[in-house]
Image (cartoon, rainbow, N blue to C red):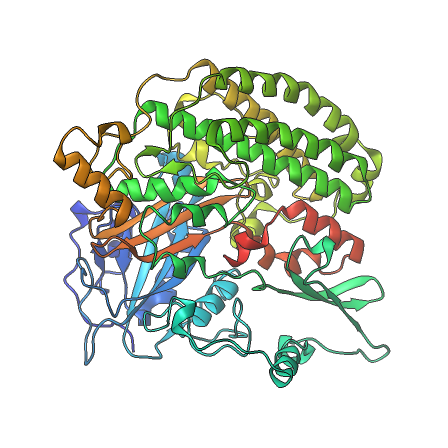
Length: 605
C-alpha cells in the first residue's frame, strides 16, 4: 500500500526550480517537499503517479534529468524524527521509503551543483509494492533487485525480480531493522554435505530463467561460465556467456560473492568509527573513499574545515587516483597479453605508496580523514617526498604512452571494441572515465567543485569514440592531470590547523584535551560514544577513481547512522556489460572487463 493521500501543496516561491516545474506540470498532484541538510531537492510523490512524474523529469522537463543515479529503500519503522514526511492515509504508519536519485548533467554544469533531485514514495505494510521503472531506465533493473533483496519491496513489472547480492537460498531481507546486525545474534553456522549440495545446486545456471534459448533451428548454443575466481574477471565476479562459436549472443553478470554488508555495518558503528569501513569499498581508492563520507557528515554537523584541510584532502585523494589508475594501466596490458608493463607500473605505484605511508602511516587503507579534519598534520619533510615522486612520475608517463597508448597491438585489440555512445552511457548510469570517453565533459571536480577544487587549474581529459582504447587514453591523461593538481598543492599549501574548531569534530584536537573539564569531557565522549549528530538527511558526492561515489546518510539524532546508502560507480558499470558486448567475441569481453576498471568490493559493498 502506498501513500496516495492528499497533501498541502508546496509553495512555489520557496522551493527549488525543479519543484516549481513539477507543481506547474502536475497541478493536481499534491507534492510534499522535504528540506534536507544535503542540499538535494527532495519531493514525496504518490506511487500511483510515480512513472508519469519520472517520465516528465527524464524526457519533458527543460534540461532533463537523464541519469538514474541511485535507487534504494529505507526501513522507517523505528525512525523517530520524521520532519518533512507526508501523512500516510489509511491504517498503519509509514513503514518503508523508496527513493529515486536523478541527475541532470546539463543543470549540474550550468549551476555547479543544481543537477540533483530525489523523488520519494512512502509505503505501508510488510510487503509493499511499487511499479518498476525498468522501462524508463535500463539500469533500474539491478537497483530494484537490490532493493527487493535487502528490504523485500516488490517492484511490479520487473522482468526478473530475484536476489542479486545475497545467495538465492537466503532467508529474510538484511537491511530491515528487525534483521540482526551482528553474527552473535545468529545460531552458529553449520555447513554439512547436504547443505553444500543444496547451495551448489542453487548456483546452477538455467538459461530459460534469463530468457535465453539453448539452441536455434540448426545448432546448439554453448554456455561458458567465466568466474567467479577467474583472473580475467578482476575479482570474485561471475559472468555466464551464451556463445555461438566465439560470438557472444548474450551474457548474464552475476555479482554478490564479495558482499560484506557495508551499509548494515553503518547502523551499528558510530559516525567516527565507520570511517575505516569506507576504505574497504573501493579498496584501491584509499582516502578517496573517506572523502564523500566525512564531507556528508560535516554537512550534517555544520562543520567548516580549515583551508589547509581542504588542500591536504585533495592532494592525498589525487595520490590515490594515481595509484588506482596505475593498477588499471598494468592489468589492462596484462589482460591484452603483455607482461612487462604490470611490473613497471607496480614499481611506480609503490613509490606513490611510499609518500602516502610517510604522510598517513599506512598504505592502502589509511582511515586518515576525520570528521572535521585529518588524523594529524603533514609530517616534516613531506614536501621533499612529494617533489621526488613528481620528478620521477612525469617523465615516466611518456614511457607508458610509448609502451601502451601508441602500441600497435593494443590499438588493434581495443579501437572500435566494446563501444557505446554518450546517450547509452547516461541511460545506464555510467560516470567517470567511461562517460568522458564518449565525449561528455562531466567531472564533479569541475561541474560541482568541492574541497576547494575551484581554485585549481587542470584539464578534464576527453575522448569521442567510447571504446576500450578511449577509456585507456582518458585514464592515462588523468594521471598527468593528477600530478598537476598535486604540484599545485605542494606549491600552495596553506598554513593553519588540521582540524576544525567545532564541538562535533571527532575526535577533538588532542592538544586541547587537558585545558579544562569541558574539553576533557568532550574528548572522552567523542572517542568512547562518538558525536551525536543532529537529526536529518545528508548527501555528498565526489569524482572518485572509477566515477561518481556518494554517501546518503540519515541521522535520527543518535551516535550512529539510521541509514547509510553508498552509491558506487562500479555497480552500474557492470550492469551494462550485456548491452555492450552482444555480437562481439570472447577476447573482446576480456578487453572490456579491463577497460571498465572495476573493483568487486565497490560493486557488492
